[in-house]
Image (tube, rainbow, N blue to C red; front, side):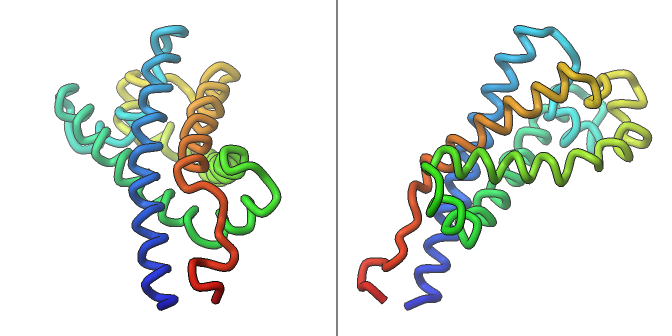
Length: 161
């Protein structure tokens, strides 16, 4: 019974993460048009696999959705229960994604040095105020959507066990 609920929670988290990753990409499309700078996460995910922009965009979108599935499944367990006990669901999701962003952001330093998208000038540094702000905004959108889709934790479950 507990295993069944765990699997259901992971599945719900994975599905919510996939949808939240689409919301993130929509937020990215908006800020790329507004600010006209080179901070395309599709290039981060896809450019290492292909030099063809059409291909790396497709690969990048698939990899971004896959990462969203993983983040959603991770959030669906203990973090969601812990955070949503104290915050509205949207805020719990935002906090989780900002923590994820803060933990992974330092890896961009290595990527700036070795990733082909930065080496070719396709992307600009993510360590500038505007680009860092874009990452915060995009992760707010992802987290809010994830939190709302998964809602509050249910402490007692359907059977009260």
